[in-house]
Image (tube, rainbow, N blue to C red; front, side, top):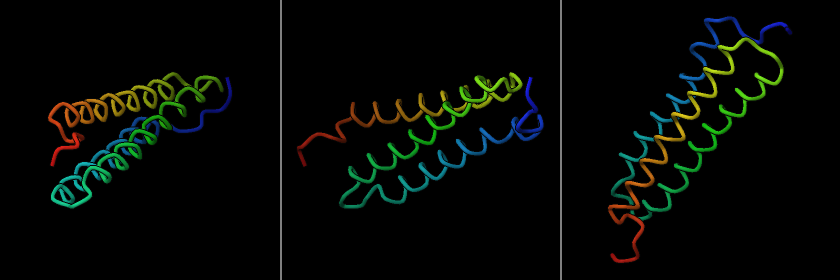
Length: 105
């Protein structure tokens, strides 16, 4: 086994911090821009950014597994990223279901 990249305290908090801060900023900024003229475009861009961050966290967890890091590193990063992807997907699906993306104004 190679040397661990992080101490257990760091790999326990880092994925939640990354996904939590990006998800929190996502929610706050959507709330601020909900009445903006181009909200649909802002919503799509912000959803894509948070989705890419979550996918990056998952990929980091997979890379950690490939480099034989402790199980906590792989599991913490991959599961936190997966939760973020599911949450953004549910928000996007709900917005699509209520007609946010319909062409009718």
